[in-house]
Image (cartoon, rainbow, N blue to C red; front, side, top):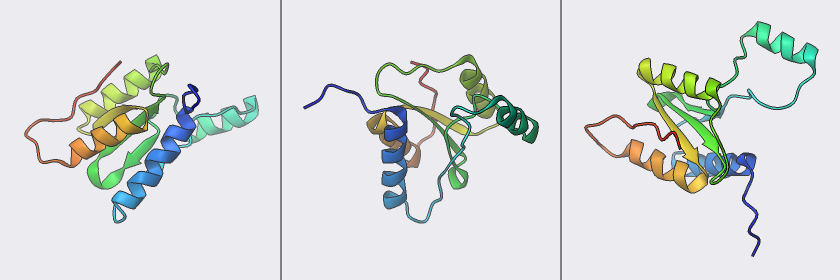
Length: 123
């Protein structure tokens, strides 16, 4: 068995696949905000409204934003922290999933009836 951690990409692919099977009537989509781009392409996207730090996934029906990170070794950028705080202040639920299993657990917690708002795990 390999000790290599899955990439953030693979963790997110696994989460989206699980989510769509588990909640087939609830839509989830990715915000294609990352990746390497040429300077010209980056300038065009910025002019169109692309903003660094937007969380990776959104579930509109639940008002839920999901930022995915590797289970170990991932960090939130200052832009990501700023967007998560802003979205939280706007009344959205925001979670940071440290790998597939953690994101899955937090999503399942969001679906449980509670009297508290889901907090943000900054670690």
